[in-house]
Image (cartoon, rainbow, N blue to C red; front, top):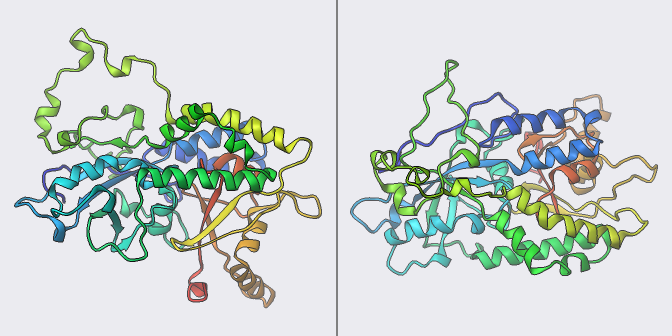
Amino acid sequence: ACPGSRAPRSLGGPRGVPVTCQCEPARDLAAKKSSPSQMEGQMEAAEARELAWAGCIPAVFSLAQDEVTTLEPPPCYHANLPRQSWLPLVTGEVVEHFLPFAPPMARASSMWMQCRGEPLRWQVPVGVLFDLLTSGDDQPGNGDMLPWQLTVRFQARPTDQLRGSVDDAKALVRSALKESAFLRCGSAQPVMDLSPLDDARIFEALCSASPIEAGSPAPAPSSGGSPPPLPPPSCLPPASPVSSQAAAGQAASQQTPAGKQGQPSASDAPASSPYEVYCQARTPLEASLLRSLGSRGERAVPTRAFVAQREWRQLPVAPLLPSGDPTTLADALALLLPRAFAAASDAEGSGGEGQRPTAIVQGVVVELNTPVSWLYEACSHPDGFLYVVCLMPQSQRTRG
C-alpha cells in the first residue's frame, strides 16, 4: 500500500465484462457486441460508441523507490484514465505530483512509466495498453490488476523509449487522423480543413482524466463479497489541486460545499461531457469525409491489430468482400495476422481443434463474425483507427 493514501476503490463484476470504472455501460456494451444480429443498426452503433467513450481505468501511480530523494516517499496519485486517450494527455498532474520528490536533475519531459517492470509505450492508447498488459488467455482485463498499478520514473529511460510530451501526443493523434482519413476516402484534406476550434475540442475531450481524492472513503463490500463499482467520472469529487491528495481524509470531508456558501458551485454550471465535446468536433469532420467520398463507398476501414506493445500490424481492410458480403473481424484479422489464422485453419483441416486468437476491442471480447464496418463505427478511437488486441493461443506465442 502506498504511504499517505487510502486504498482506492476497485471494481467487481462477472467475467467477460470489460474492465472500466463504469460497469453498467461496459456491461451494456458487452451485451451489444455479443449478438451480431443487433450490431447492424445505426442506433446501436451510436449507442455503443457513447458507451465506449464512458470507459475509464482506475489507476494508482507510485514513484519508483530507487528514485525517491526525500525522507518519506510521496503518497500515490489515484486517477481514472479514459480508455480513449493517450498517457501524455492525461498524466500532467502526475508529473507535478512526483517531481518534487524525484532526483534533482529530473524534468517533467523525462518521466516514463512501467507496469510490472515493462515500460509503457505512450504512443499506444491507454485502453489498448491496459488490455495488452493485463488480459488473460481467454478474457479481457484481469480484475486482480485493478486498480492498475503504474510505476513512475524520471531516470534510466530505456534507449528505445521515446520521450512523450503533450505536444508530441497531439502531433501523433493529428498524424494518425490524417492517415486514417486517407485510408477511408483517399485524401487527408477533411482533417486539414478542421477549424482550430474543432481541433481544440478533440484534445479537450482527450485530456479529461479524473483525479480520485485520497480523502474519499472506500466503499464497503457488497453482500456478495466483491466491492461495488466506482461511480462514473461525473459523480466523482471535482478535480482539486494535486497537493490535496496528500491531505488527511478528515480535512477533505469537513470542507463546506461551495454551493452552500451562497456562491454557485462548478457543478451548477452547464458542462459538456468529453463525449459530447468530441462529437461537436466529429460532426463536421464526418461531414467533410462524406463529401470527399461522394457516391463512392469507403475505400478501407483503418484497422490496427496489436499482439504486444511493439508487435502490431496495419493494412487497409476493405469494408466488403469480393462477393459483396460485409468483411468480418475474422476476415480482417486473417489479413493482418495470416500466420495465426493459417495455423488455426490447418489444425481444423487435420481434424483437430484450431485455436484462433481472441479479439478484444474496447475491453470486450468480440465475436469474429462481427462486421468490421459496424465495429469501426462503434468502437474506433479518436485518431480514426480501430484498435484490436489479439490474445494469441499459447501454442502460437513462440511463433509471433
